[in-house]
Image (tube, rainbow, N blue to C red; front, side, top):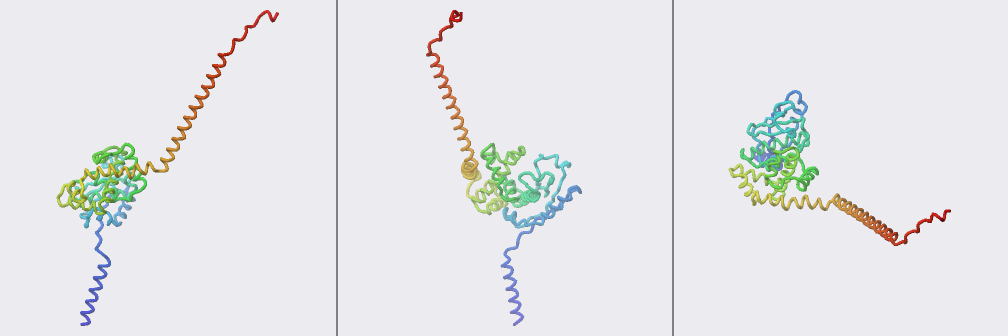
Length: 311
């Protein structure tokens, strides 16, 4: 009797410990690092980074099991891999081959401020492909999710979005997608706006919105259908909301009400006042000159000298 009671208490204790610990966390993705001897130091850094916590990335995309191991190839600038992509590209993922290529000598470059964000960005692409069961997702969505997963939103990101919105930047999802194939400046704007779009998606629809969209795609739905089922609106309506209302409140209003703009307005008004004062002074001096010319014209002519008076 006592042994059965002891066993029951032990089982109860184990159950309580398990419930207190909560659900088991997902495993980290297995990364197989390959690098030439010249890149031994960044390779060691990548190996260390691979051991970090990936739970937030897995939660974002709704993936409980990371899937097959991922090959991470570090390439030097002298390699053919580096010559086949633009100089601003610091890494890329090839989900079909289970491979990531990194160029450590190109870090930092936006959106990857360091080797850690670069690795998380590219690994997220690999995991996102698994979460979507290999289906295609729009470039703005994939890059935005990877950028959000890789780093915290900072002042620099907000400034890039503001400059893209106020200046020459993408005004539609098609523009964002096209920017990734442009030069470094265009790509930077597209990365920033794509991340802002995904943050807008999460803010409007909850922190699991990306995971719900990908779950629909994984079940066989087209991206647009999965997006509509997860958010209750079409992709087109979502884009109109962001490029219409969101950019106004998050970019134009802060810009117009900022202290920088206030001082710009004060400076402009001061310059206008100075210019107007100078114009008034010039008009006043011209009036004085005209009056002087009029008085001079009204005087009688001076008498001519009589040569005889000097005899």
